[in-house]
Length: 250
Image 1 (cartoon, rainbow, N blue to C red):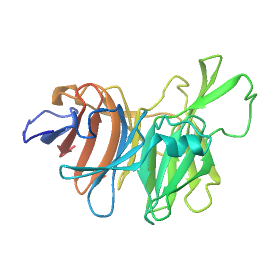
Image 2: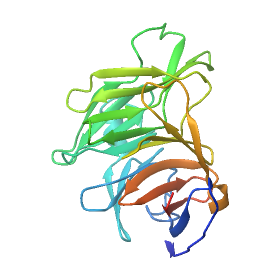
Image 3: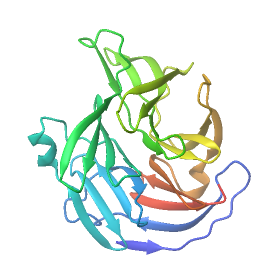
């Protein structure tokens, strides 16, 4: 694993400055899984979702597998995690195709907590996917940005809110651009931030559009797979370089 400190100043609209890069190559053992999401737990350790190797916790250079793929198979669920969100009660929420799950490290249980199909449509020919999940402690809600497809053609895209306690859907906000599918999502004091490609977008709940906030290519980030906020810093998971990039002043 490689840790590299780097300060890169950039101009307006290009995302702030890079103050640290964490190379994730080899961080989770010889399998070197595809990392799909990141969040920060109460102790400041990093929690990662992966496409095929379950859920991991990284504290410094110490990696721990919290949830193995067979834990999903035993529950009859897909093992392809697409994002992760640490909840305020010690549990961890995750998304897989079609549904959201909650993992409780205290007893090792994995349960379906919410369904991000909005309750309409013909699900024999339609499907939904999401690559974004976040927990908003201020509102005690989970947020995701799913896209509905018919025969793999985008039909609609929404930002959805779910009750943390019950998993019940609370709001569905349809975007004008049905082709938009966020690769990551986080919540800040200023609102919701979505990512797609190398760009960040501001989103106000209830709006039908997103507003481009920054292009991170100037920071060497090209494929945003995960977002999290830690203090004043934005943690950006770059799938292109397999790095976790800490951005300040963004």
